[in-house]
Length: 152
Ligand SMILES: [Zn+2]
Ligand SMILES: [Zn+2]
Image (cartoon, rainbow, N blue to C red):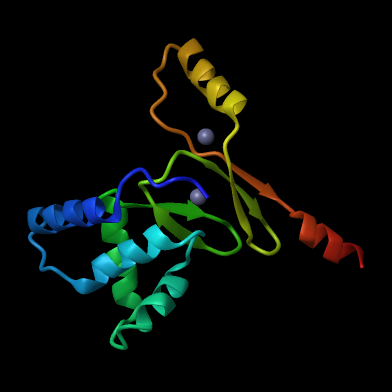
């Protein structure tokens, strides 16, 4: 798992500032979604997030989860991962940079960092006279487990 770059308390502090700036009312759900994603080791779908939160609050609806996720993404507290098969998944933004390997059959997601690839991307941008701001590298694969299952 990639390290967190910021404490949960500090993220929640920034969230309160951004809620005020956007003229919204404080809601427990926004903070709960942030902490679920902060503590979770994996990439969660809106449904999984809703399930985690329902444990504490039975009034949570999936549409309000979607609304909050859009807000948190717009405000850059969380990032989206388009996975093809298993839809949109979310993770906390305050994580060390990493790229993703996504299985097209079972939807499993692995994280990786490859220094050579990272450097090569900077080089490509620089050689074109550009300054690299960010990149999104996703490898779509059939994972080892699925290859094994397909054989039998
Ligand atoms: Zn990368
Ligand atoms: Zn990730």
